[in-house]
Image (cartoon, rainbow, N blue to C red):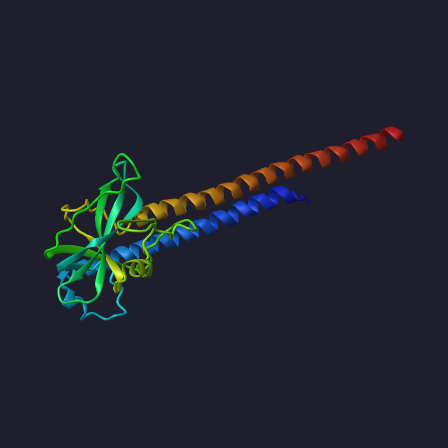
Length: 256
């Protein structure tokens, strides 16, 4: 009877369970990304909405992917620089400011795009927004805006502009003393103040599926190698056992 080595069996079992778990996770991520892309495509088919047209939609609707044509003004004296943003290998920031659509007391936090860092991080880029009304086209995003950040990164310096490590609507409300809606906009194809580069989905579903297949193959490979190794060991032990039995018989015959 084959006795399985405890440590080796435990390691292989761990690898198989981990591989299957990660494959399942990547598969779910692919489905989520595909669903998001489908929702965005559905929203794009609605065309460009106005601020007043947006208010006619259900409040519970996920507004991610909606595109708006807005007229209004920027809160020019206050803006944020989202740190650690690279574009084509160059370091820089994302430029965020509050946009007030005409006739609205609520502000919309808008990401105008990427601005270059400059030679020193000690001197933040200065941006001049116009005081007069302007037109912008934005794509909305709702839900998780912060993404990954380290503990303690919520601290922002005094004065303006403010250097921040992540986006948090409540934090931006407290810092600006403004009332903001619970979603934000990303400027589309407008390079007057910064360079738009927003991508609603960075890693496509196909890549997640490829990772899922890789993890599944890793788990399968570990299992197959283990099975073949145990089979070889079983055959080796069986041959040794047969040899011992034959040797015992020969010795018994010699003693007669």
